[in-house]
Image 1 (cartoon, rainbow, N blue to C red):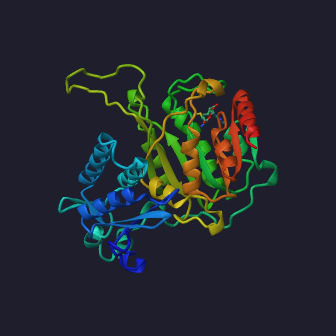
Image 2: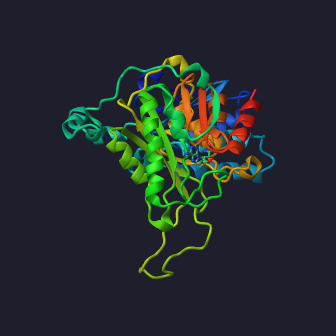
Image 3: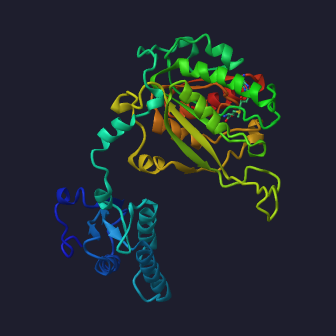
Length: 401
Ligand SMILES: C[S@@+](CC[C@H](N)C(=O)[O-])C[C@H]1O[C@@H](n2cnc3c(N)ncnc32)[C@H](O)[C@@H]1O
């Protein structure tokens, strides 16, 4: 195939083409080869190129009409199915290529084609860095008094789950000793937690929450991160995610970004429309929550390259800040009413921390953070006011080999 559609040496294609490699379990049959040739011929030699050898199919992608491309291949496969005389073809290879291309976010559409590279060149802001500096890079978080001297977490707290009030436990820790805080605090929705009351006056709620979060700011390292999973309470019109973010910014934490956690289920359990079919006061419905991410002192976190454990594919997918992850399905089993799923924490850990880092969850619940941290070779510390939840968390952590 390479001979029929010569591809320039890879170095010439580097910036012009996106390269997708699919490994072959066995060499293609001559019939499969012919089909790929047909696909190559059909689609512009410039926007889409194939290079096939005995062990891999390499797609060089610049710009294609994706829907036309997809339908063309699906039609080819459908024709083959209708014609049992033809030599067998493995459709999964063709489908995999369609799927991989469909997962890539294009830069935009030009001339009817989706562009996967270079399109942005013409839109690039000139002198971006000097413009950023002129506007005032995170101006709300400048001139901090944060110390740059980081400390070790005392060994006695390492991989520990503590049953107590997190504010009082955190007060015992030294400054700057935690790499990453990730937590989902009580939302004040009125859930039936084991020990703590959830559903108090909002001022009381935020006073207590901020007392804990201020301790988190103190104990997190310079360059460390705090990630808060939170859902606003729509029926009270309380934008908790904004209120919390505002608090962090007042404390001179840098807003690193926000991830929309798409749960694909409605948050309100009842059929709330507000003013039915009237603009008087419609009630908006949401199927997602937020992860608000803050950095202390610096948006860059130092770490060794050998401690990076995120793959290229994961990085590409997870920096797109909308994560579709189903809610935790085993809350009954873990006997906790408001858990976040392990996948959510695992992604956050791999994207925002290094293997070997110290991770803290001050509202640890049934220990999902500790489980994800242990499985990804991070150190952990979890605190929860409920003895019952702490016992469950310890059990879950112990079960990991
Ligand atoms: C939303 S849940 C966290 C669930 C956890 N993310 C999980 O996946 O299991 C909030 C937790 O905060 C705990 N909590 C409430 N007030 C606390 C406090 N002052 N100190 C420590 N934990 C507290 C509750 O017991 C509850 O388990």
